[in-house]
Length: 270
Image 1: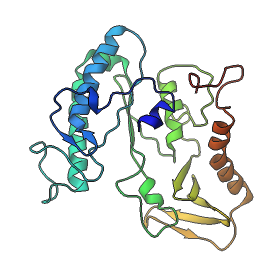
Image 2: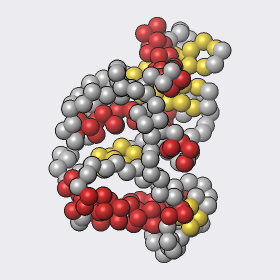
Image 3: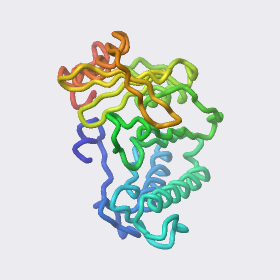
Image 4: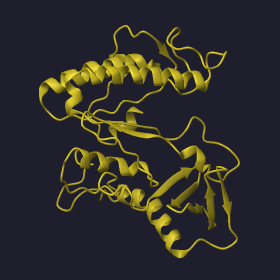
């Protein structure tokens, strides 16, 4: 994780070695409650400095082997180290943090994004198990009005949405959509599973790209959580959209061209 973060522009990483006497340490490091307690203290200090800040907090308690401290939750399952118990503990730790944040000075000036990458287990008989990629995304803040975005979205939409909610007018190379400004615009979802890449539009039409094989066309059913693949090939428009989005990140990365015209591209500008 350190190599990933440092390779993507993070200049400070708080790791297990930076904790003094954590309450619990497991295979993935300190517990979520230790993580959030330290986050809370850091956010208070950052807010006092009066300068803008960005923090990413990586929860790990809900990863196998699902280790967490005793006595924090009423177990969901009889056996302790299960995904249900671990998720319940992770929710407990996050809830405690949000309660502390709401009673802190930094709450008035901070946006919080809570999001996953996929559900607990991405597996199954599907070429791309789309149902496992349906995840929550929650944005909280002192003056954020409650609303629910109904259109299909992807994680790349979250960064431009946060900038918009901050009131920042900016020119940036982000390819996502501003969900705050265009909450009802037709959406799309992108999913990578092993060597397969799936594109799903707002009507649940699915295009699956496969190495050295023709693309597949299908229709996803939310009720069944399955994709019914069709005999005919994917439409050229959907195929081109899927292929373009699948190839773009590697091309931008390889050519060091992810940025703005006239702005140098390099370790300090990515």
